[in-house]
Image (cartoon, rainbow, N blue to C red):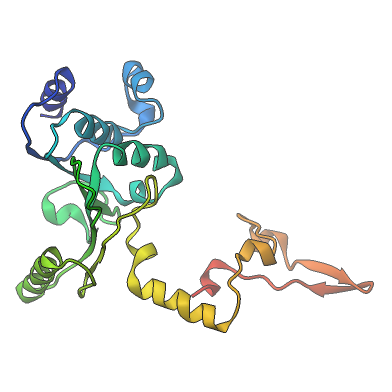
Length: 239
């Protein structure tokens, strides 16, 4: 199905607006053919699918695609997000906080996916909706999530229980991260700003990645000729 669809789309531009949902194989660039690697340098197969769709489909078309969540914010995917944003406007980022085994997809239960919907339009309206779909335990929970999603779709701004809206969209190439732009996160940043100046951690301390403390032992430093311990903050200490 993927080969047939991609062949049709790649061979000619489509004249009329359509709605397309893509579930391509998620395959690393390392395993693609040499021709694909040359034509779409640095792209995984799902990124190629999204790029081709947004370029070839007619104005007014909508494209939905199921992607690994890492695509939304990884620096390695930044160039693809930039190129796609130049021809289509992201309209919805839907995070799936549950195993997609529930959808019949044979992938690792810890592997998380996201649905991205873009519109190929010349409109200046940049509104973008984020929604986090939680794992549900009952039909009642499922109905609550569906109702909340419908509320989000009908709103022009603000937030719901599981989602929120960015009326002005995002800059080209910016991460499409649910947590990064959530109103509650912005409010926490404002609260911290009231305490004092916000500085990057790297401006205050030296960041050392990948240190095995069990192997290195207790770090020491000399202060006034005496050896003193160095405070160490591990990832689990940061809340």
